[in-house]
Image (cartoon, rainbow, N blue to C red; front, side, top):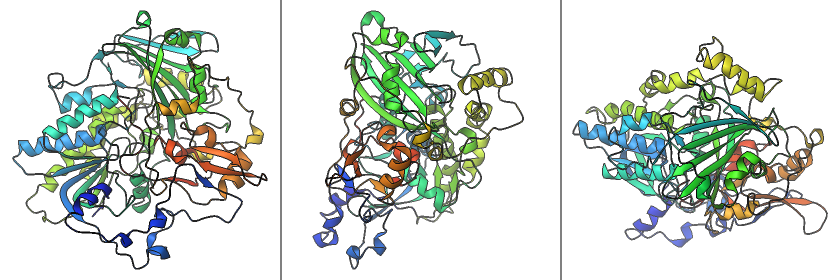
Amino acid sequence: MLALALAKIAQCIRALKTVPTEHIAPQLYTSVHRRTCSSVSAPRITTHYTIHPRDKDPRWEGIEMERFADEADVVIVGGGPAGLSAAIRLKQLANEHNKELRVCLVEKASQIGAHTLSGACLEPSALFELFPDCKERGAPLNTPVTEDVFSILTEKHRIPVPMLPGLPMRNHGNYIVRLGNFVRWLGEQAEELGVEMYPGYAAAEDVFERGMELHAKVTLFGEGCHGHLAKQLYKQFNLRENCEPQTYAIGLKELWTIDEKKWRPGRVEHSVGWPLDRNTYGGSFLYHLNEGEPLVALGFVVGLDYTNPYLSPFREFQRWKHHPFVARTLEGGHRIAYGARALNEGGLQSIPRLTFPGGLLIGCSPGFMNVPKIKGTHTAMKSGMLAAEAIFPKVTADSVDSETAGLHVPEYAEAFKNSWVWKELYSVRNIRPSFHNYFGLYGGMIYTGAFYWILRGKEPWTLKHCGLDANQLKPAKDCTPIEYPKPDGKISFDLLSSVALSGTNHEGDQPPHLTLKDDSIPVNRNLAIYDGPEQRFCPAGVYEYVPLETGDGMRLQINAQNCVHCKTCDIKDPSQNINWVVPEGGGGPAYNGM
């Protein structure tokens, strides 16, 4: 049985049973806003349970740990495209077979779609399978792609690249969407089918106070990239023993309203090259939406296997906007939203074992993104549908005991390997790792043209990645600092004003969700060797090195209030000392259609 803490539900149940106040240790709930970590004093124990288990904490000795429990047939963690598609498909199957099926979905965001961020250019294949009548149902497919533009940028110029049929970046037949709005629409379809939705409830062992347990025959984990629970499951069930380490990127995005004369609804623009050097993987997008106003979505993606600790993905993004080819669209416009998230880039080589007793991994949690397409919504949705179809006959079988059974469903992994998702990911498996060559970007592009466009990925070898992203940074002494221009406040902006546009907020009185395994490491290792890269790779200004009050050293300051839940810190920290854990439900960014 897998327990999911729904902290705020417990507050409702208190009307039935009063929990004495002494059952909560008040010293555990200190403010995390601008929490400081001194690395020169004796390391303090971080009080979160993942760092210091409560059965070893004397402050919890003798305290009652009872929680209320409820039971469902299927529990789904994560209200993104994968989780919602799984929930919808389960209820569709239940209706088709006249079966009673209780499906509960929990989502840590305050509302469905509030934590969703993507480009997004949607390939509609899985959507049309799930809802052939999706357009009649009002799916927000307002902007079919009408024009594809791909460029290699130099500092001042643009080299156009033709988008030939068959290339992964070609978007004929796709739709530009605001993925948060699309996910919200999926949530409405799920509710109509009878899925029990619980937004605003974080799924963890516990958050803030002992919450309700949800027990299920099968739990689907669709938390998104680098999920908090998934990374625990990888260790508990050794799910990554036969795959390569996952590799990631960080994606940063803004929404702008622009001069209507520059607006080209349906136009899709991608670029590689400047401002990144040839050995740093990344690129950009700029999409013209058709939603009643001259709106564009633009963003920048940087592979987290970069080596220079002085690189700042946020500042690279701001610098890119000043390229003449980009700035001409934005001049006279107005920025209205900002956000960031991590992306899985490992592809087929990095997919872990997908099933274990009582649970399945779906969506971006295990990593089904098609990297050269820069698309993962369609594959995430299909994985949720495959999971639903695999578990449905087992959870509804008459032979299954009504008590929680913890079913193992290896049929899901078999269905995945027989699906178009597997075939699609197999065909592009070598494109991302092909960039690890002397020529970098240009060598990778040549490989793509020679082996993907001509052979469609049928080459008889599979390339490997370079290992954990956290291990790729070089010492600062071996790298050249990057001088970034100051933002002009018109096209480029500072970090804190950007975070303000994300709507991010966390209640101050809760356990820290940005925890350190050892408080001495930030100064003694990260600052000493890598010049404190966490203050540059974080897209929200969470990590700062500030002088000690005594004036004889530095300390790490964690501004957890700013966290946009991208999890880049957990991925890229060269010491693997930062452990991102789920905060209280409802906290984090409040994206409006990102």
